[in-house]
Image (cartoon, rainbow, N blue to C red):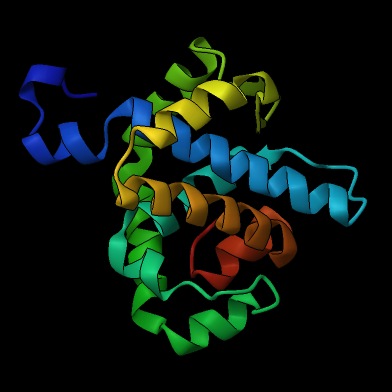
Length: 171
């Protein structure tokens, strides 16, 4: 990971570990909500999907192209937005070090729980998250909202291997 003072201003502002940890918190929360609604035994966000979900949310064009309902299937979305499909796959690779750093910071600060190869949102952090969002811009609030949506959507898309295959990626 690049030293903080050596990062570009864009990296420091848009991909800082605290912001990315909040995005991961919402991804994990959304995944958990949908898994519980469907009575799925695995209700924690697989780490693989944490990277995929971050790629969906952190790129503005992709985030704005997301469906409005989780009933829209990932294959339908991929068919409608083939260029975004490749952007998500590329984003997973580009964002990997930032997401890793965010996972570590989120776990260290008590936002995220790491359980094996999955991550969950620490519900005890809800008040801190709400306070952060109240003081944030509308774009940050949109990212958080869409992250929760993406978490729910990815849960409905199938297992990690299926999601990666649909996005043209290797498990």
